[in-house]
Image 1 (cartoon, rainbow, N blue to C red):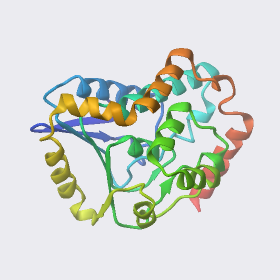
Image 2 (image 1 turned 45 degrees about the vertical axis):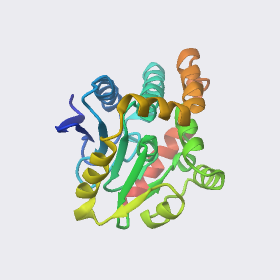
Image 3 (image 1 turned 60 degrees about the vertical axis):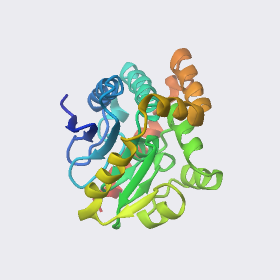
Image 4 (image 1 turned 90 degrees about the vertical axis):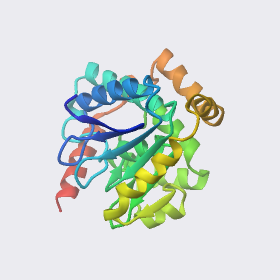
Length: 251
């Protein structure tokens, strides 16, 4: 896999998004992530899974320089794969931990929210869903995950303002479960992963379905029936919004 790394430490697996410089998501990364989750979920020796990003960024979401310019068939493939990857991460049978080592925005924020436990590094980096500021609507899977994981006021505030937030506010709002100094992040993550790896995996998977089952079922229906907004996902206005966001990020 070109854009995802898998490493093992005993019964703990580490899945690292690795597409420099900010681990932005394109079709290639989505395909690699789907393969990685399938392999790890199907391996009973994996008792817990840590998801993190290479370098100083967790994941900056979809690649605004590439994805808005995909042809219609590629956009359909991107949304279909997004729904499948998000579903599989959200429903993975083992405990999952997000080690948020830096910016986690848009799709990257949603990847972190798929995980059962979320620990972030302290610092001044952004967390949030900026789709409304770009003008790109949410695939159904991402809405279901966010609706399930966030309180309604936080869900409304994040999605309708598109504003990013610092880690301290993310902790206050229940987006993150705890914070750690950057130099201690992986050590603390390993402690959490090792503790969760002691849980019986098969019953854990069933309990997770009890907790998340309704949202997973709604995502499954969309995967089976097709995403309703496939034909109108990234409009000309969305392309313009992506270009404007790129320019703002340069300043």
